[in-house]
Amino acid sequence: MQLSSKGVVLDYLREKKFSTVLDAPSGNGWLASGLAGRATFDGVDLYATASGYRHIWMHDLDLPLPADCGSYDLICCCEGIEHVGNPLMLLRNFFRRLPAGGLLVVTTPNVWFPQARLQYFLRGFFPSFPCLTGKIIPGTHMHITPWSWPQLYLYLKLAGFTQMELVPEPMSKAKHLHEHLLAIPARLYCRGRLRKARTDEEKSFWQTAASEASLLGRHLIVVARKT
Image 1: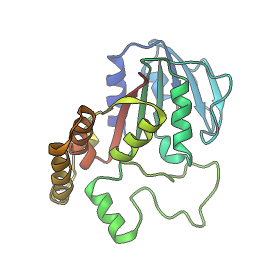
Image 2 (image 1 turned 120 degrees about the horizontal axis):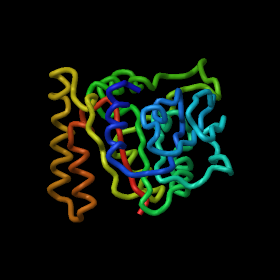
Image 3 (image 1 turned 180 degrees about the vertical axis):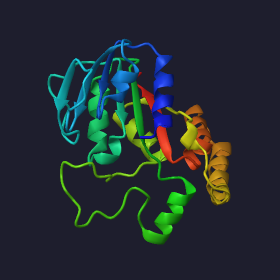
Image 4 (image 1 turned 90 degrees about the horizontal axis):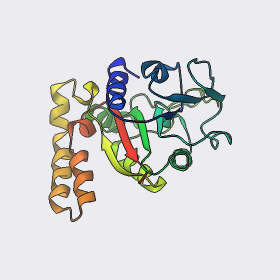
């Protein structure tokens, strides 16, 4: 995860109120370190080597969360959901661990940006999601599940979450002029669907889908609530 993306997540959360946090996966502990003193942190990670957590479990997120995990005001899944094969189970586990009004933050690479679509057209594989034949080693950090704003929105909705928000960041901008040009058809399509939207939820979804962060960004920071 880029330092600029981490900075946006930290700045966003500094404006929120919470007292207990589950960081899953906790990685090197950058989230607990960046928000030290703001809340009590628990962590879940395949290797569980980070410090600064009240409890940290060495655990595979393709399995249900540890039974002794508690309830949390905030759950952060930063650069984790692309590594799991059962993301809906994971999101439903998160949903159950949040109270009403609880917040979930998910970050992951975005495969909807134009160059990714072009590479998929030419090779059949998205950037950072290569063919893993001969390299499949369970328990390692393999990118196996690609995500875009529509796909992540769908899974969050199925898990019970509402009020999904895509947070802009420095990686939301295109790097090359041709990416702006390649994004035009998708932008026009999303805007057309926005004009035909009948509910506030549809309007919000298509407005976000047509945004730079959705169409041009190489990375997604998505926030959802349990209401």
